Image (cartoon, rainbow, N blue to C red):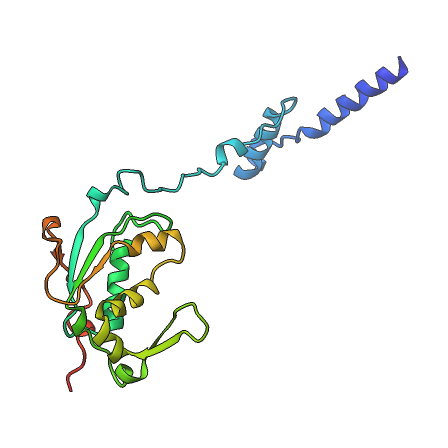
Length: 215
């Protein structure tokens, strides 16, 4: 019985010390009055945390749906490579293939378009790159290394110059290989994709950015 009485006495003392003494209203400031009233109202009540109301709102990341990846939603573009610098032109082509020009761009999905390049045999490079730039290939047999310059490869297979430049700017892996299949390069001015109604590609950088300097 003495233990029970001691426990009741301790609990009563705790409840008494939890409540703040209330001074006369005339001698209290507004802040102290609010604190005293709040403490007096919470005596004998459990303190409830407002953490549940302050939890951050998690918004799921948008990912392309199957309709966004459908072939029918891909636009066809045609690029005339005559007189264009190789690097400037291929960077813009890579953007179209990857889909960075779209608001639905997603780095892990194929949301890009198709690109048709014509007059690939008339693409140019600046400076002495026509003789200094080299391309390497290997037949797979001992001693089967072949190296040729830009001018030599342009005379032999001009389409491969544009293909190699664009492929190096695409993602490495299955996604990049799929995007590379959407590139169609032709040496002459004609192409067999008129049924897809390709649009002439116009870049916001202007004509100066993709035209070689005069002289």
